[in-house]
Image (cartoon, rainbow, N blue to C red; front, side, top):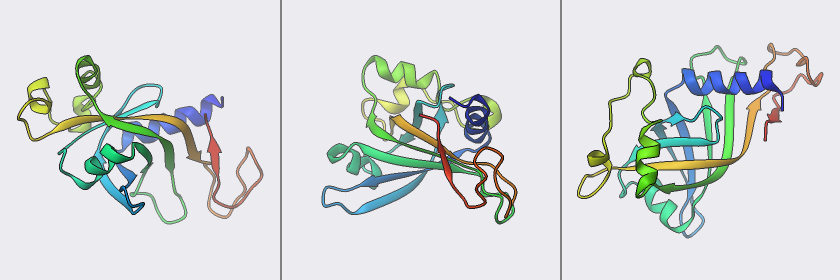
Amino acid sequence: MDEELLAHARDLADSNRYLTLATVDQDGHPWTSPVYFAADADLREFYWVSSPTAQHSLNLEKRPDVSLVVFDSTVRPYHGRCLYAAGTAQPLTGTQIHQGLTIYPGPPSRGGSSVSTADVTGTAPWRIYRAEASALWVLCPRAPRQPCDRHGRADDHRQRLR
């Protein structure tokens, strides 16, 4: 694995607060949602808190397959920085909840509010979810209209990390 690109991906996850989550309903209609997230250190697990009645949560009940993107929307045009993942997602239950809450909402510097088990269980209006990434890519970093150092390509292209 390219450790430099993995560090680039980690920086994207650490410096952005929202990911765009893509789900599909039982009839095959796509749905995207921005969610505040936190990821584990290996970028294998992405966590968020949502209402179980939100459309993306309802979609996960029928179809757990997801894709997601984390991107820096503050950069100038043609300077894109993106992290992509695909995998499956589900609400956490039992001891998984405690594990998820050791990662979500991330360090205080990210600005998220603390969440307790009581906030995501029982009659609480929220649940904690986890996407397990089976594939991970980054947009290969390069200067606009210049080829990247790794591939010699001047177009936008992804580099698979796993």
